[in-house]
Length: 190
Image 1 (tube, rainbow, N blue to C red):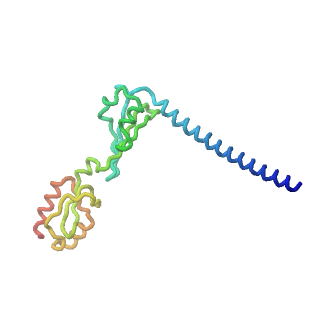
Image 2 (image 1 turned 180 degrees about the vertical axis):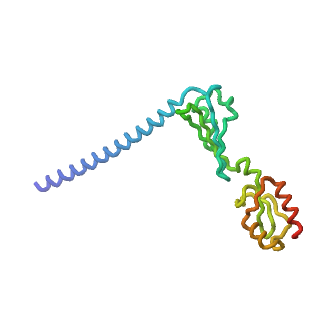
Image 3 (image 1 turned 90 degrees about the horizontal axis):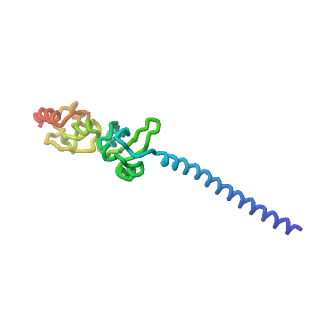
């Protein structure tokens, strides 16, 4: 009797474990099904192909400065007649693009990540120090990513306050021409 009871308990325990496993697996399938349905619903409701009346907005985010510029997509004509799937294949994530439809505004949205400075910051330069010499860097003050050139002006010949300012890299200019004008005045210290 004890052996039969023990066997029955083992069988019930195994059955309960199997049932719980089946329930858990089924729960995952149900949860996955709803997620897939949501995604499939978005894809299937992506609307008709792009027409001349379809608003297409481009949001470019520049990684080096973090600025985002929003504008109309200039190559709208290249998207004419294409479906969302075709556009997503053409503008891939590998190239930094993300494409979706804003249903509320009925607008095709294109977001692009660009590994560069925005046009305004690309023009900016700042002065700093590199290996004991005054140097010109591309981009806004404080970011010494891109060294444009090293001058012959030695930091040790500069007044203390100017040297500290150059060490901090806070002398920023809107163009390289403006920086060159300042550098001409610093030549007297060399």
